[in-house]
Length: 117
Image 1 (cartoon, rainbow, N blue to C red):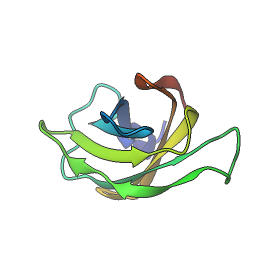
Image 2: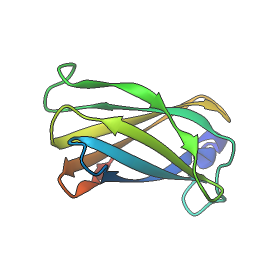
Image 3: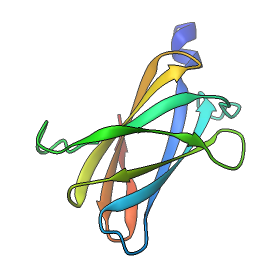
């Protein structure tokens, strides 16, 4: 395994619905330097979404993630077009360019992990 692969970030994403706003979710992202690594602080990235069952038809404009609470924790608010399975794309510019992709299933109770890519 290369040093770059070892340095790859790991992200845990959880999204909860915003009260009284259908299809709007607050997503918290926990970033670590690799699996089980130290929290990633001062990261700069956007969160976008695409519906894999309809590529290009439902594409959510990326929003910037902001630091949230503890080191390595970030927050982004996304507005989806419908419930179902969505792929969240985390596009990093700092500490280095990277993209992490997480598949979540969104419903009335929020977004839950539908598998990692």
